[in-house]
Image 1 (tube, helix red, strand yellow):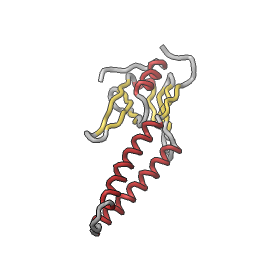
Image 2 (cartoon, rainbow, N blue to C red):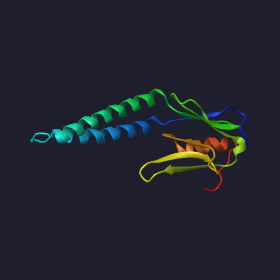
Image 3 (tube, rainbow, N blue to C red):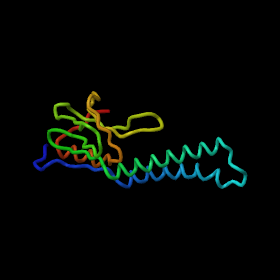
Image 4 (cartoon, rainbow, N blue to C red):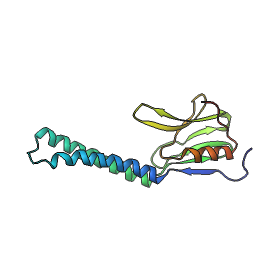
Length: 150
């Protein structure tokens, strides 16, 4: 069953994004501040490591601000599903209706897994950072998309 209304837009969840960045920064802050709270002098190698961690923390803050200003969204329509990048990505990724059934699963390494919407043959893949799985599944069903076996 396909819908007669326009496409459904699924946006990133700000709470998930903010929790992820805030917890990463909290761990970095702990690593930066713990040597400074000791009474003995800080060795040169530790000072260099603290400086490097401060630069990493600043990079994470910059990335966090960038993702807040440029959120990504998933547009689910009857004829295609497309990932609308919020930033400087040159192309929009799409899954056309002709691609067939979909699958939604976590992919990646043991430490870092990302939720991905893809076709069964994995030819078309859309990363779903900070998005709600159930909201995506419901919107896909509303527009007549089906999910195959994993």
